Image (cartoon, rainbow, N blue to C red; front, side, top):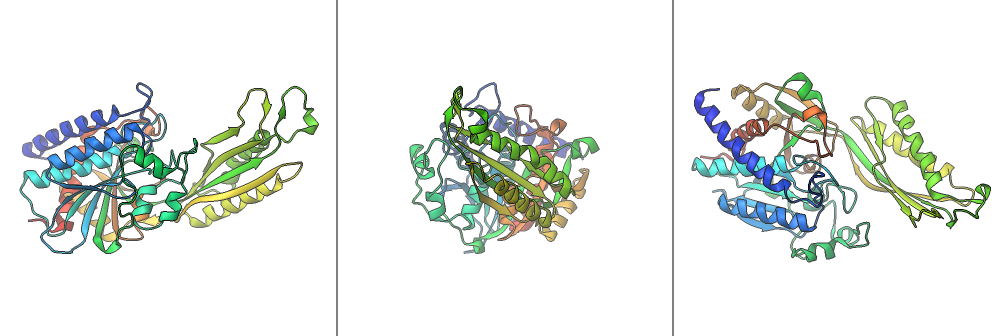
Length: 417
C-alpha cells in the first residue's frame, strides 16, 4: 500500500474505533461485557446513535415494523434495487463489542467514503442495522433478516414472547418503535447484500491472514425441548417416587456430545439455555425448557441429529415425564454468490491485502438473504478465536481494511460515478 492509502486506512481506523467504543457503552452489564437485548433500553440508545450517524453521513433514515434500521443513499436509477450493506447490533448476554456492530460500522464508513469522494450510485446504497440476530431475547435468531424476506410473518411475530412473558410487539412499543410499519420487503428491491463479520473462531489469526472471503455458511437448526414432570418437596419425596424434570433434562443433554461426535464432519450440538421451573432450592423441578443448537456444513448431518434428538427425547417419556420438541429455526447450508465472492477476492488482491477462502461455522443474516438476493461476506480475525464473551476483540485496522474492500466492491455493484 502507498502512503496515501495508509493515511486513508488510519483515518478509517480511528472512526471505526470511535464507533465501536461508543456502541460498547450501551450495555446492561457494564464491566461484564456487552448485553444489548432487542427492544431494550440499550437497544434504544444504540439505535439513536446509529440513526444520528446515518443522518450525519447524508443518508435517508427509516425503520421497519421490526425495528430494523435503513440508511439510504438514493441512486439515479428510478425504481432500481439497492445494494445493502450491514449486520446486526444486538448481542448475547455478556457478549463482546464486535459481533454484529463491526459490520454495521463498516457499512457506515463505506457510506462515508461515498459522501467524502462525491460519488453518486446508480443503484441505491443502503446501510442496514438488523435486530435480534442472536435470538437472545425472543429465540430462534436471525429475526430481523427473516422478517425482511417474509420468513417471519405478522402472525409469527405477534406470537413472540420473551422469558418474562413480554410480547415482542409490546417491547417494541416500550422504546417508541412502531410495529404497524411495513415489515416484509420485496426481494426485487435488493440487488445484493454485503456483510462484514468477525470470524468468531481461530483460523484467520492462526494463519496470520487479515481477511477471509466467505464461500459458504453452515446449516443450523434450533430446537426447544420441554420436559414436564411433577413438583414436590425436596425433603419428603422419596427418590424412587420422583418425576424430576431437571434430572431428566440433564440425562438427555449429557448425551448430545456423543450424538454430534458420531455424525462427524464438524457436526456440533450445543445446549446454551436452560430454564428450570419453579426454580426453588427446596422444590423438585416440575418443568425444564432448554435449547438444542445443531450445526453442520452438510444438511444430511443436521437432519440426522434432529431425528436422534427427537428419538432420545421420546425415550424419556415414561415414569410421569412428558416430553415435547419444537423446532424454532431451520436453515440449510448456504453458498455465497460466486460472482460476488470473485469480486471480493479480486478487490482484496488489488488492494494487496492478504486473504484466504473460509467457511462460516456460525449463522449470519447473510444466510437468510442468500435465498433472495446475491450475497457476499468478509471475515476478520478474532483474538484467540473468542466470541460471545467479554474478551471478544478484533483489530480495528482489520475492520478498516474490510471497509476499503467493501467500498471498492460496493462502487462496482452500485455502478457509482
